[in-house]
Amino acid sequence: MISFTDMIVKASALALQQHSHLNASFLEDRVRLYRRIHIGFAVALEEGLVSAVVRDCDRKGLGRIARETRDLAERARSRKLKLDELSGSTFTVSNLGMFEIEEFSAVITPPEGCALAVGAILPQPVVKEGEVVVVQRMKVTLSCDHRIIDGAEGARFLQTLKRILENPILLMG
Image (cartoon, rainbow, N blue to C red; front, side):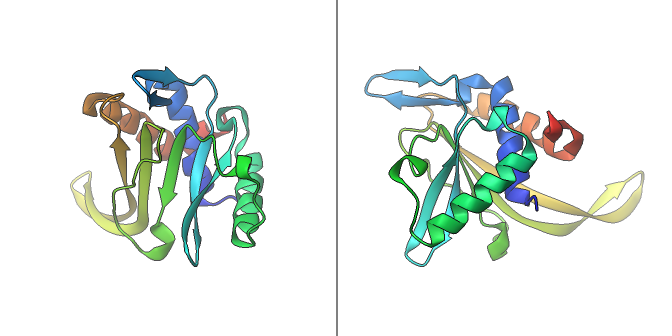
């Protein structure tokens, strides 16, 4: 079964391909750009959140990402993850939507340059073709290390992410 988090992880990887400057970290006194896209995703445990890592997300299909996130989350909850499965991410997705959190700001995990906060999917009234209709909306927030990424670059990334999520066929790429 594919979850919303899986779709967001894949969409983030595809957006990072187009905005590779966000797949970076600040190390010592320089910016390091990463060729490979390893996305960390937050897993809630009794004692707090841990971030499990799906490696090379841009090269994997959505089904494979779903299998890996499910396996990593289950092993995180049973305290069976290896150290390398908890480190090495180049970007993090933190989805608190399942806790009915509408929006929040994610804390960046050093040395990463960005973290994406994903809120709950909620019904919202919007005007379409002059009529008020109810649609499902989700709020996301991008936290950026401004030594690497400025607000305009972050905004362009979010535009791309929005386009991909609103056109799910693009997730098959």
